[in-house]
Image (cartoon, rainbow, N blue to C red; front, side):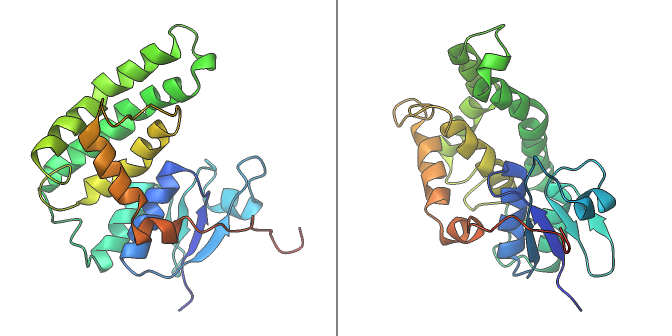
Length: 208
């Protein structure tokens, strides 16, 4: 059986969390790095919305949502027990807050010039009060977001917190959100993260 084909973009937080789950589960994939400005026809043919990540399984099934990819991979092999490290309703609620509420706040902060209704600092504070302050409070009480061990929620949220921290040099300073900074640094230093951030050349379709 051939390996699943993963269409990905190195810096995309959705793609990062999918790659983390695939790597943790030990799922080998044929990696196809995508240029978001020149999306390959092969990607659009199986997922017309044209976003990444997209995983095409050996049986032809297509998973084009990052959480679906994560859960599919971990359902087959979850050696770090991410799915069961904390109650799933709690994990799922936190992931929904990140994806539905925090991600738009993050985008307004990151691309503040496109959203002149507020200053970048104001967008930053909205993102902090909307989610990051709660994460800080959680991590002040326990090592991971939902308990003593990392869960699916930690993996799903980490790439977005990383993106937030990269907008400005002091966006996630050690004095303002110290527990979140510690948590983020731990993920950034992990061998698993280093492995999934390997640079790939942009995939070229045969005959292109």
